[in-house]
Length: 306
Image (tube, rainbow, N blue to C red; front, side, top):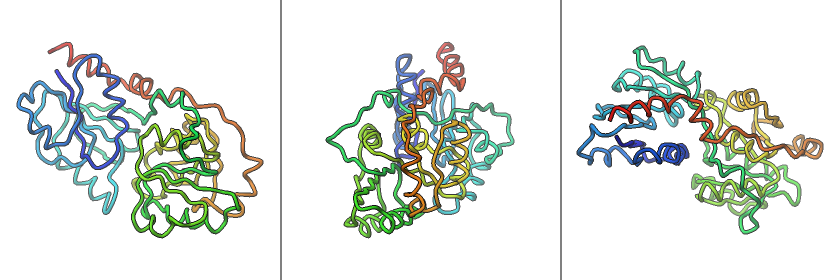
């Protein structure tokens, strides 16, 4: 039996590399889109692990997993999730990032389910500062979009920054945001870079920003960036979104809670007294997270029966 990790192909999926690393020494693990999977002839030889997008047609396979890393995003996310609930085939197993996502999806069939939270690559604990990469007083990694309110955050930084403060934004940016702020004092856009480079920039920087919208679906899932910041032992500045509060309470990792736009004169008055060297938060690596989830027993059983 081989494993095909099926994904929509529209975003970065750090979990795919983690799944490959974990199971790759026991069987062949590949990934691709539905078009690529449909080109395979011997589908009965494959366990198909779907990073959930929308797959309305039945997928032929030996064993089918639906993995809900998150709820739907973009326009009409609740309607999208409702359609997924009623229109997709029943899998052999469902994986949810957490109990909240399982409760929201509210499937009524008897398919078994497990929980597999987000993790970080094991090499994150070995990252050191890299002078060849940008360094900021503040750093944000993730999508730089209006939907996530990052235009408001950048604007607040420009209006309240101290003379030498810099703000490095790591990841893809909406063209409108990039054009508006690319020449602003202290603001640096990196564009799309590798995960290792992104996390090295986080390591280089003094403070990390975790601004999460207070709306569906973001308020139902723990922010990956918060976990990455904690694993690097960084000082985290965040808004009081439900997802950030979930991360603080679950990980027991302290964060400075700021205004919704993050930056203000009030924030800067708190920074000097808040800044401490936190220890890297261990136990978040994918190896440990996958092992604890119980998925290994399902995969092992299928491998034994081949």
